[in-house]
Image (cartoon, rainbow, N blue to C red; front, side):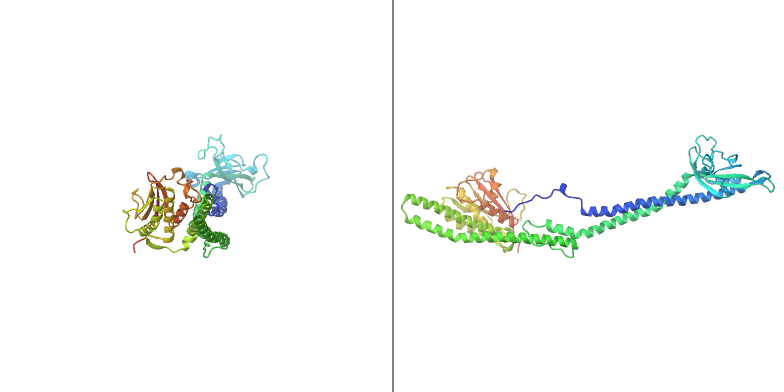
Length: 499
């Protein structure tokens, strides 16, 4: 017996393979992008510092040239033009301070912070003359004389120690400091960083799109394999076909094909066993029926006659079961696919078959007939032998369970009359009786194998199961409906196209 397994729900499925590959490819790219951004910022800040330091050094030397020694003093030649050079950029004015000896204010902004290497408790030895010292500082918050820099503003400064004094005079040391706000330097670094990261980001985005397209192209054989599996009927055990698939996917497809082949062999073996067993049983059962019929005719003992009658009924029922099993085997999906289908008139076939069953119906005191309002010709494309077997089972069931004095009607229509919204390309075959019918609670179960809704009659519970198997393998539908009173079995089959 086959066992159906429920499909895996979406909640149980893992992360998409394409997304995992994209994640593992993009994650290093993002790390490299961040590292590249940090490195780019450091390079940009270094280049910005270099440019600012060069301008500060040039300004400090220009300012130093405006200070001329006179004896032991200094002549300050600082015209307005020189101040305009230092303050050329209104948004980024340069601050300056001249002190001699270092720390004793002479000129400029007295609040500029001194060089940390040569001031305070940790001061080093004497600074080297004419060597620029670059450092970062902050404008003190208590300074109220800073006209061009806000309190607490970060600064970039250069300190230049110079020796001055005329010949014969005692040499003295002068400190020249020039400062600029760090805001413009950071803004310049950020602009360089943006100019570098913007093209990098566009390249990363394009690379991501290319990688995603490459992943989709690489996984396309897997998608084709999934489509082959999803689009298959449950009984289609044909091998999977994959052309130019990757080696890993080829191995998977080979393993699946091996499994399908093993399942197909197992199913074929079981079907052959059932068919062979049924054929082997038909001959002895037919002989048993014949012998019991002869014995019934030749005996007059009531007790023996009753026992022979029970044996005859059991043999008849067993023979019917064997015939039903053979019919069911022929109606299996593999058998239906292997059998030829042709275009035939469903109305004529039903009319002929109904006429063949009339003598048996009369013997059971049942009125069996064909609906005279049926359309003369209803063409379908199917296996006529199997459709005839399905209609035979429907009529047989109706005669078995409708009861004496009832009516059984067979009707064929080119399209359902009710409800009006059904597909008009479907042919309708109905078998209607006014017998006791089937309770609504059992109407769904009677299509299962070996299920009977009543203990009356000598059926084996395979008639409607065979009908359902045959009809569904022809892309049709079968259903039960109340006939008020009685039961109506509706079979819908696709109609054949016009020639």
